[in-house]
Image (cartoon, rainbow, N blue to C red; front, side):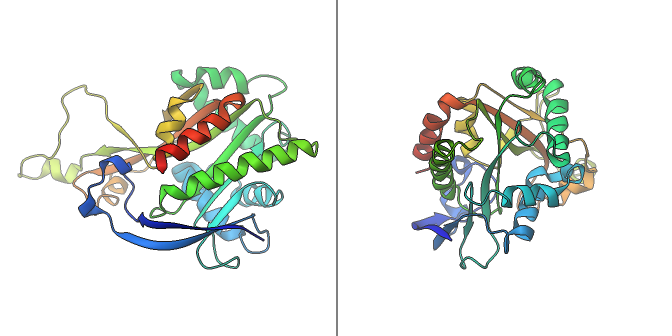
Length: 285
């Protein structure tokens, strides 16, 4: 069933960089009608699975993506998909939340919890998350999974978060297990990397960094900048499965430098979630 149809007007259909870094010459404008739907078990499985695979990037092979997709689709009144060609088409974006405490006995969620623990325990800025998720029993943490195809505008995100707030409130009224203590958002970013081919070339090197200077991290999702500002803790981590140097070169078709993707986690207190969603909407308006 369709939730809401919105005309976002002229929206940018650009690349992966933060919107603040894009010049007017680099962005094409197009008017698109987007429709928000509840997750549809009969039609969304493959599209949802592909978006989850994109979210986890190099480490997607560590998870049972089919089981995760089925779990998300098993709670069709919670979360949203975004489409442009009606209910029967594939989703271009999705947002959903899973109760880690409620589903901790499911193998697919157990894999997620182990993964979160392994990354949080080796990332100093995520020490608070590590302490939280290592508790027995695990607290009622709402794991937010959200992803969109590369050219989708960030403006589709605030409506999904606002709808999630409403749906959680209704679910709590109905005594359903969505009264969370924290929200954990899994996302990803990237670092620019100079090609070895360029370094071997006789031409002057491009954008080299000074010795010892830490690589600058960039965000695929501009809303993550706001989420991190309001977070109890946040941090980036390297994927367990790394790609070779040629892989980063394959992602530099339209820029001088290649990119190396990395994962990130953002932990929010439930009491601050509503105000954070409001801040995200104001930032992306």
